[in-house]
Length: 432
Ligand code: FES
Image (cartoon, rainbow, N blue to C red):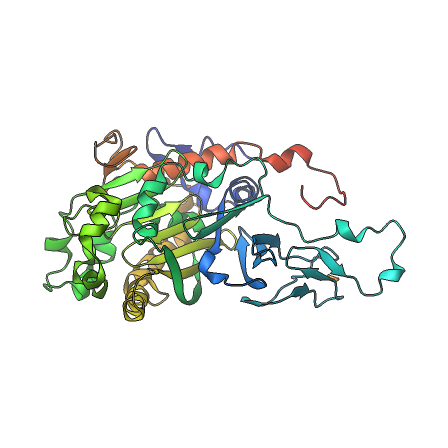
């Protein structure tokens, strides 16, 4: 059964019932109606150089294998054996010719085809091996290096699904004509907290920066004066996409790269020509954003990350360092180290955020604390077109993108997904 969540979110008044962070029935519904039908981030193209390269990740709580086939095409499959459901590939990443299940030995090639069944002669005549390949995603596509996929055959194309966020995302993905790549490994860590807390904050919340990160800002401050003089009065904007995405950023005439190694490498004139002044002085500064539902990014830090849901109260953060391909190795390395110091698993900003989400989640389980209505009213009624940044924007400290995030969440939660139309049948067909 599905729950009508309309009563939990009143975005016209900026109110959210805390039940949406603490109810297990709603969590299961999210996996079915938010994660299964949406485009989800899988990996970066630079992780796959040659046929057979693979990377294992998750779509919601579903394990998936992303791999390059012999035709150099990227594909993604459910990482669950069609025989009895064993995890087929147990490595994080690598290169292979085939994925052999360690339970009974069924083996699949990199296009997902079942190519070996031990003791196959004992199966009945009507066993059709070609019908038992790995379950493949319905659609896979890339946007400027980022690989996304969806189980939903009815989902609109990826570029359409990104809505107006592309203009903002390009401040990170399109600075370099050569594109981007990821460097170093994938950092993975577990946080206590519902996945929405992180996704929503990266879409919208700049309000916390001056308080939660005050000590970190003081440590990093070139003048040593900290946030009071440098951040609090910072002007900026926040973009809220009707599809639930968001990106908030200070506006700064020189961009916030100015105190960094990469600053010396960038040709700002060329960047302004390529991206326009509004993007160099806006989304390319110390902003952050979220592609609904659970992919987030920080252009200046070079962090891209996904918030994998791990039950109602827990998320697993997977984070990469993204750099421009043309950067010399020493600049790439400087960017990687800067990212890890700020938003790596032990980064000084990351620690502050994780603490907030864990404490928020912990208090949600009290009966009284968990029944509270939460306030999302900042900037309500003050959004509009500013004539500089496309789409609807509000002030930097608005909750506008969070309201947009939960509007999208509510609409998906209240809409039967494609798979619900054919529920209740067990067939040899491999997708619902
Ligand atoms: Fe994979 Fe049996 S579960 S071969």
